Image (tube, rainbow, N blue to C red; front, side, top):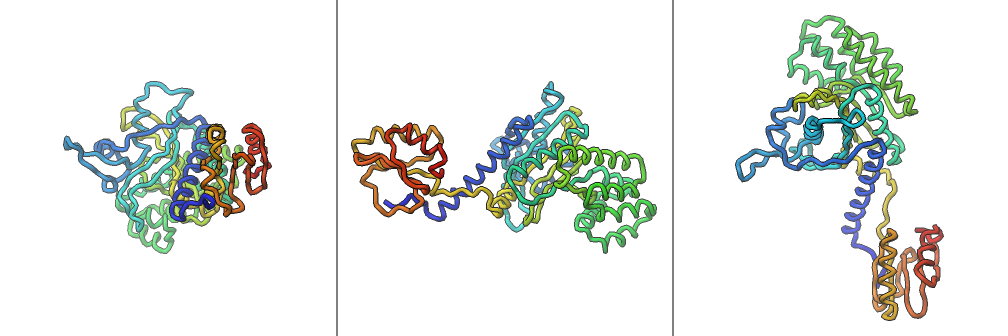
Length: 416
């Protein structure tokens, strides 16, 4: 029998799954160290819950189904909304806030070339308090998680939903006009922003502040100084003070090199009210995570519940992880093959159980399956009349009993 090698297509699929599970485990471990507890929301939700809640996923983007009673349901289009509803029903909070995390699939109508309707999100929601310390800690959790994954280059862009919204209110733009301007700002289309603004009778101070938005991006200290030139009222001043405090707290965490300030950051979810942020990794053209503060969503479920959260776009995260070849898993080298003759079958099967309990991956075969054409890197354990021997890429080791074998494998000398 040859060294245990899976067919290439199966092996690639299994390796992808193992990498995916490895990522999920790392995210879960980091989320729990910040006091978050895992939750799950239903895959099917009432259509009315989303259609009656403003500022969330557009109804046209939802995948709708009709159950046997004629009720219209939607496949979970996001996780934040049902968590906000769940938290609003909680009578008490522990330690001042509720902290939830999730790894769940969301379903939306495809609006890109991939036509993929299902995506995995891994994220956190912190509900109940809204001081800058909570904002900074949530952003720090995102930074900490990316560091856990050992990405060599990443950046968290931080902005504030209130900055853009306040200018739109002062300009008295309609919803359609605001969306048109938002598109120009997001694409940094400086050539068309001024002609667009010239169509309106705007105060020169407001016009100047709007035109500056795409340029307010970079080092937090420098951008903060520039942004102060465009403050036109107390609300904008409060926005900048809030951002300044969050940046100062992130400095205390020692994470200044991981963040930049972007006052042109505008999220497509209209429920955001305060700090917003997104994360980028080299060679991935889209944000790998997005989040922010949404203090009024809970009110739509009958409870004032300030909140902040973020979610990783897990498929993009997996893509970046594989592109950077981080902690790649070798399927063949992970598996031990244990061969035994008839006289050692009972001992061999017992040893296999003990090794599996220790976390080793074991395949058992009768000696009749053995052939002398194994790869040099194969992990082989022989339990026969002639010998009891373990073979790894680091060499061979003879053992008298299972305790000696476990001691050898766990010593590091086996190269496993």
